[in-house]
Image (cartoon, rainbow, N blue to C red; front, side, top):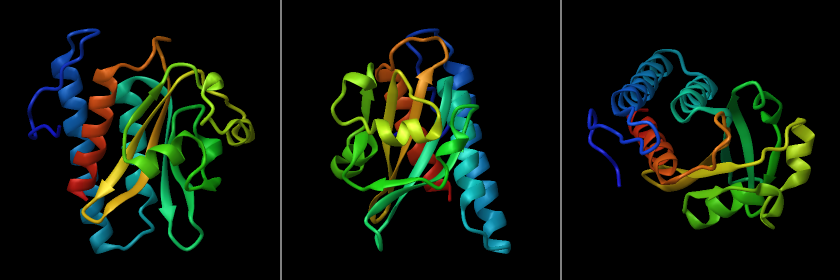
Length: 183
C-alpha cells in the first residue's frame, strides 16, 4: 500500500527507518525537480528515469537498477535507464513484453522477488549475458501511471548478499509510485 509522503518506511533488517524515509523523500524531490525542468525545456525523460534508478540503487542498496518502458508500437520493453556499476550495459536493449521476469511483472502488474534467477524459468539469461552481468537475485516492480502499467524497474543483487525481502518490495514499489506521482 502507498505511504503518505513523509511517513516512515520500516526496514526489518536494520531499523534504519529515518534513513530509508529520507532516501524515499529524496526520490520524490528529484522527480519533482526534473519534471519541472522538463516542462521548461522538454527532454526525452531519460534524466528523470536515471535519477529514479540512481535513487533506487542507494535506497535498496543494490548493485544495479534498470527501468524498462513499454513501447506499444513494437510490443517490447525497452531499457531506457540504469544505474550502478553493473547496470549501464542494459540501456538500449529490449525484450518482448511477455519475456523474462520483467515481462512477467509487466503482464501481471505484480512485484516479484527472485532469490535465484538462474533456477527461475522466467529469467531471460540471453539478455543478461549481453550486458556482461548475470545477477544472482532480482527484484522487479511495475511502473504505473494513471493509465496503467507502463514499464518495469528491476533491482539486481543486494550489496549485502541477502535475498530480497518484503521490506525491499514495499520500498521499491512505494519509491516507483512516489516518483511517478511527482512527475
